[in-house]
Image 1 (cartoon, helix red, strand yellow):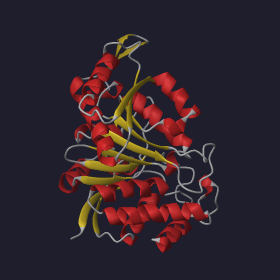
Image 2 (cartoon, rainbow, N blue to C red):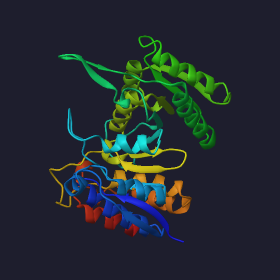
Image 3 (cartoon, one colour):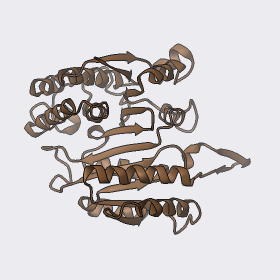
Image 4 (spheres, rainbow, N blue to C red):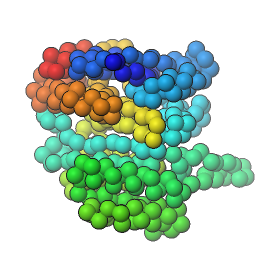
Length: 334
């Protein structure tokens, strides 16, 4: 039977990388009935909202989505599509593996970087509770709950146990935000006590950022509140080549949305120059999630082969290939 999956192509280069990823998934041997729905600029032009109900209706049927990049306006405009999806579907785990692709030339290319970031995805300052107290004074509320903190910590420890990982590090600022980040830390410690075989450590977020750029190979699994997780996960992506070469997943108890975490790159949209690696790696995670582990491994090996050979890389990673050439080389190797 074919899997039914919601496809949200996104804005800018989104449709190009989405189409390339659809071809790669099919080449990996997985039959999929894609439900293509719009979100972002195209949806707004057609419906007056960046996230139409049609997207949620599709995800209610499929429970699995693959999403390209969607633009979010800064300091105004429509709500963030990403945040709205996470809240509505209770996708409380933002999961981002950080690992170097073979052949990719970066400042840290010789280090064995292999870490996984678990970012709490539903609260913290992303709750969006802010208001103007008096003219020119704005207050934004940081919401941390024990329930959300425990479940993200448990997700990290269960993954560590399942995958044979050795250490989970909680990132915080409890030396200053003693109540909110203190609650997050106490929750992580409580969960850690249920997993005595996994080492548990803690780092203040500013120190963690310094350690990440000095000794990135020493990190294993990181668990963070929402805002720190957003910042640190992008910093970590920079260690292995940037947002264009790392996958992303938003996971809940009933739904999962796999996404490219990079921007929409409107300057190259429609030119056939986009790198589809991030969405393809997200599809690797998606295939494993739906039980297609052999196909997931085939797609992962194909991507690693293309990068190791370096003949058909796109310009953002030092090559001169088009999106179509990169995708064709990948499919040939699969």
